[in-house]
Length: 295
Image 1 (cartoon, rainbow, N blue to C red):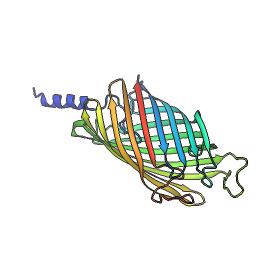
Image 2 (cartoon, rainbow, N blue to C red):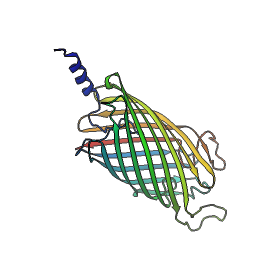
Image 3 (tube, rainbow, N blue to C red):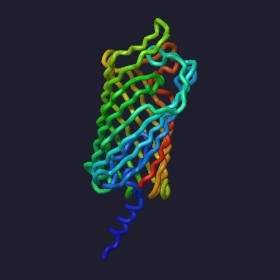
Image 4 (cartoon, rainbow, N blue to C red):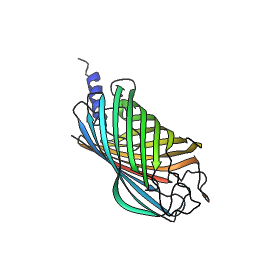
């Protein structure tokens, strides 16, 4: 009996992620879904800093539960929260002044993900996701803002070198309805529109991870985002890219990603000196830590 195919299959199984939907990347998502009846709990922590002036530090928290409805369909729900500390910054129409608060709930999220092709069993993995977000705190200013966002996404994943190398690409289309709450005592010349706004956004991302030791992977990912608003057309665009480090075993996994903004464009605030970046709704630097536990 030829044992080489069996040995190759065993090596492939050992080299693949311990959990089907293990998050190798900080911002990108692979094509795998959870097995039927399996579950995971995630904790996301994202630090956003540096708008080029003053002091800006926002920390986003997301606690998410994910469940395998079937071997191809996964459902997830999440509670979002944030903290903010900003001073010395006032951006017309976006940041009305200083704001500081500790951790508080800011939104809810629901998601479904369906797998068409498995990267472990087919030539390439392919999944589609739908996501619905409802936020009541503006992620940039910390002010009250009702926001409903629907996202339709695609996930591609390809394994190389018997599972030691994983390439992932994502694409998504977002549609957003938002309305800000009024703010009292603003300067007369400060714009703070409270009418309903409609926006369309696109997200494109790609990344490569290499398993360099048992349970350890390292690589890099990049994410391009652009947003189009009813009255101004393309409002902004940005490109973030950076390194990612991942550890995973059968029970839990952790991922750390550093994502500086490489380039950006669109609207800029008065006096912005770093003209190659978009710093109104984005920051110069993001760092994300993700922790997952399967049960």
